[in-house]
Image (cartoon, rainbow, N blue to C red; front, side, top):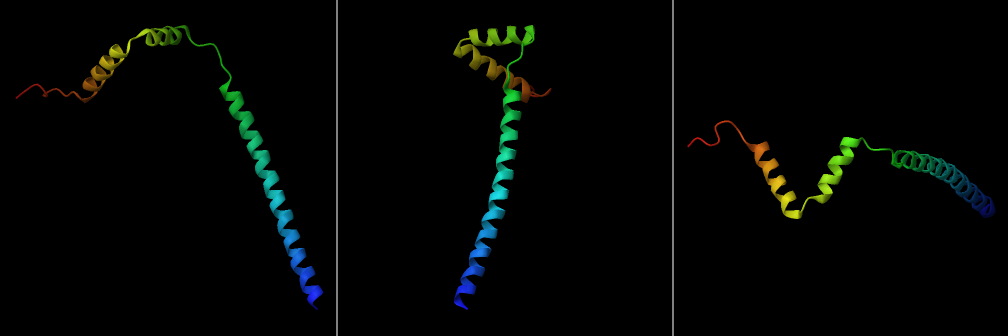
Length: 86
């Protein structure tokens, strides 16, 4: 009887391993597909000339100019019509 019990446990474990390996294979295939999708999306394409010009301009800006532009942008965004009235 004990041998039959061990065989039953072993069969259950094997079934679990088989199910798990099928699940792992499905996950690996999904990961492979996702990696291919990411690789396709990361391929570089030609930039619009306007975008290229803006990027070059930004790279040439000094740190203080970038800080000043950031402050100006923030102040512009939080401004409201009556803010200077007191």
